[in-house]
Length: 108
Image (tube, helix red, strand yellow):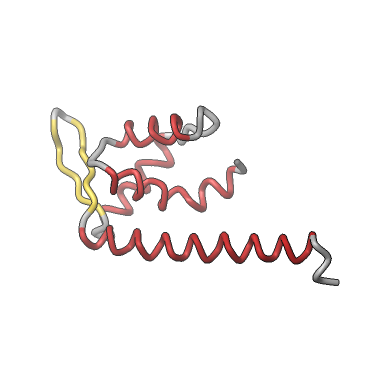
C-alpha cells in the first residue's frame, strides 16, 4: 500500500483499533502489522502524534497503567468514527466509480 494512502487513513485505522478494545500505542502498531500481514508497520513517530491528536480532540482518553498509557475511545470518538466511516465509504465508492467509468470506456 502506498505510503501517502496509508497516512491518509492512519487516524481512522488507529481510532478503529481503539474502538475494538482499550489498548497501548505499541499494541496498535502490532495490530496494524498483523492485520496487514507484515506489509505495514507504522513507526512510533507516526502513531503517537495521532494518539496525542485523538486525545486533544476528545476522541480517546488515556490512563496510565503499569507505566504505559492505555487508550480508550470516548462517546465523541465513537461519533467521529461513525462519521469517518461514512466518509471513507463514500470516498472509496467515488474512486471505484471513477475507475470503472474510465476503464470501461464511459468517459472520453
